[in-house]
Image (cartoon, rainbow, N blue to C red; front, side):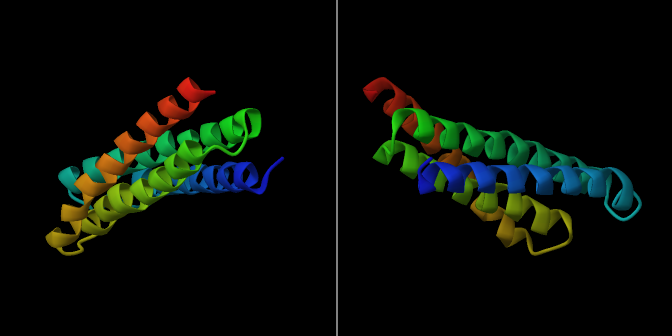
Length: 126
């Protein structure tokens, strides 16, 4: 298995673990300290982290099956950056960080879309 495939599989699995932990934190530890709106945002960020961490696992599998293709590598890095920008900014703002941090979330969302398109390109070219 290539180092790229291993990287995306490991990082995806770690981020899935963190998503479960953050989800549990939101469901148990933060219910009394966050507003309903902030708790809803937290849950949304966890869901998107979970979906896109699964996407990283998919990318790792595709890199293994299809070989080290540039669109897949770009897809993986885009998805990883998207998780940090999108979900990360929502976590920070839900915990009381400056609202300006939330303005980077759309860039993370755009990176998610780019990542999925790059997966399609890689599979189409295979």
